[in-house]
Length: 118
Image (tube, rainbow, N blue to C red; front, side):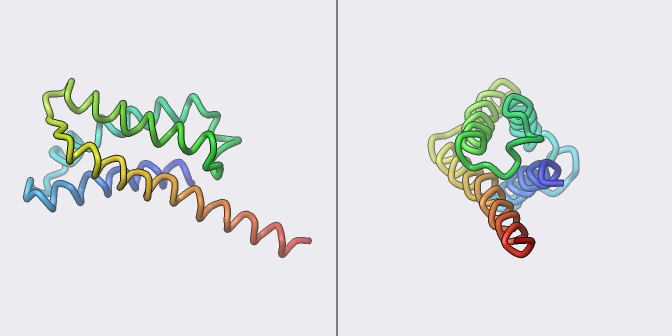
C-alpha cells in the first residue's frame, strides 16, 4: 500500500506542477510529466528492498528521494523536457516533503500500533 502511495504522490506532484504552469490536465501530458520521476522512483525503490524499508527514513527513504529527484530530472531532460535550477529546487523540496513525509507518518503509525499492543 505504501509503495502505491509513493507513486500516487509523485503523480500528484506532477499534476500540481502542470496545473500551476497551466500545462493542461490531459492524462497523456500528466503521464509524460510524471514518467521520468516514476521510473527513477521504481529503480530506487527496487534497490532499497521495500518490503523491509517502506517506513524507514534513513537511509532507505533518503536514497529513494535522492535517486527519484536526480534520476527523474536526468530522465526528464533525456525525454526532451527542461530542468531549470528553480525547478530542480522545487522538485527536491516537494518530493522530500512527499516521500520522506509519507515515511515519517508511516513510522509514527507503526510506532503507535506497537505501543497499543504492548
